[in-house]
Amino acid sequence: MDEFIHQVFSGLATGGVYASLALALVMIYQATHHINFAQGEMAMTSTYLCWALIEVGLPYWVAFLVTLVVSFGLGVGIQRFVIQPVEKAPVLSVVIVFIGVLVILNSLVGWIFGYTMKSFPSPFPEKPLFGNSFLSSHELGVMAMTFLVVGGLFAFLRLTPLGLAMRAAAANPVSSHLVGIRVNQMLALGWGLAAAIGAIAGMMIAPITFLDPNMMYGVLLYASAAALLGGIDNPFGAVLGGFILGVLENVIGAFVIGTELKLTVALGIMVITLLVKPSGLLGKTVVTRV
Amino acid sequence: MNLLSVRDLHASYGSIRVLHGVSLDVELGGVTTVLGANGAGKTTLLRAICGMVSRQGEITFEGKRIDGKSTPDIARSGIAHVPEGRGTFAPLTTEENLRLGAYTRKDKEVENDYERVFEYFPRLRERRAQQAGTLSGGEQQMLAIGRALMLRPKLLVLDEPSFGLAPLIVQEIFRIMRKINEEQQVSVLLVEQNANLALEFADRACVLETGRVVISGTPDELSNNEDIRRAYLGY
Image (cartoon, rainbow over all chains, first blue to last red; front, side, top):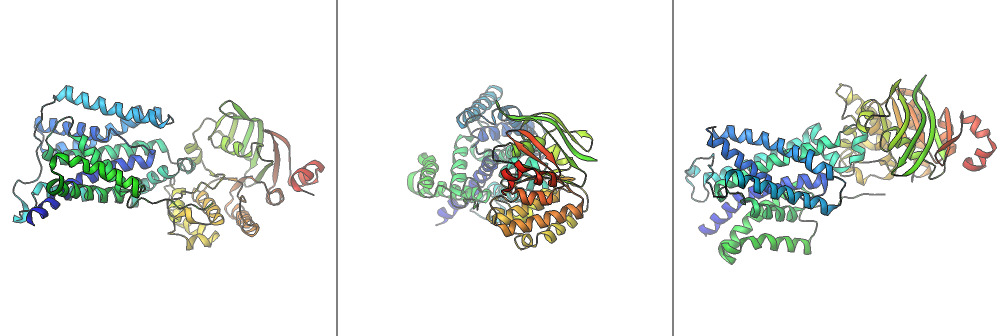
């Protein structure tokens, strides 16, 4: 039983990382109706940046904040110079562009930092908090960070005029123009935020998976499955899906199919979701009356 | 004095030219209506003024050229466009739709204007927290006009506000628009299929046929014109 509880808790921790990355995917999906396949590599690049900053001697949290700011800029830059030019292109062209960004970032990081695995520090204490035996303090920290990110994002989107404008730009770009919202700036902002959220996901998972240029492949798959399971157009769904995915992955991996086949859990969930409830658990069909 | 004047406006969708040198004026505080059959270019004319289609020609608003500006900048200069089909932000609530109307404003009057919209359209107050996409057609039209008012526009551009609505609702909406025009000193540029109603409301009118203005003048002049009466007023 203890083993089971332990697996559930550590699943919740990795689930938090999936939830963050899924949230980043959903943000971009809502605004552009594309799944950003490069999201994982963007997060990986950010994580390497943070590692490099720590290596040159910056304290962890300073490096963390600098990484967030630079990642935000990177996201804005990718939207401006890579995505915006293909805005009106057919969907397959956009997918190819995303994959292009993925390959470029992956190779670039491998070229600069090498392909050997590196360890990545955790900002949280080594001893488990409160003397519990189920949860390391990093796992606890990851969960706390997830709630912080999710809460912050929701507060921004729900409570601030800028957040409202972002949701408006995603819902109806033409009408947004008519009320004076500069839609392209909103898209760039969305990409920036998604990149920063992805960066947090990367920095949180790296102490668990170690740092290497391919570290986010699996995570991106889980995050996509999470977004799909929760409802690709619903941020709440993405978070819920992330946690469900994390727990299922861990529990099924530990007790049913073994760790080698863990990734099939994600793929299986994708297939089942699409077959049984394509809109996802919380994905809603928008009601319109004509 | 003219608030808006359009001179020799051409507009096209890709290679298809829709407007061939349209000119019209909206007086300060006045109401100008554009009549015409389907496909005459009425909606395109409004879109061209707001920079939503590629256009050439001279568009002057408050004495300044706006024909090179982007749609958001034109909105910021004080033109609120209620588009064909109402342009509701369907997944957002009524309240959020209205707040978006005031997105560009930083002044403290926003709350007053918010209340004023509810005074004009009491039905919207009841629907405040409801998802806008679930409102009835008439309510969505009210919401669209309310959202436009939240911008505190100098010019309200309306694209067929009567479209698809029951006659009683149309009457009510026109009654409220007249009130808005009088009380708020908002000028109006109105495109309308319901020519009788539009001519009652307007102080200037013109008729568009295949992208050209064929006649313009006061509503009386148009109603007394034999051809216009037969083609658009139906008697």
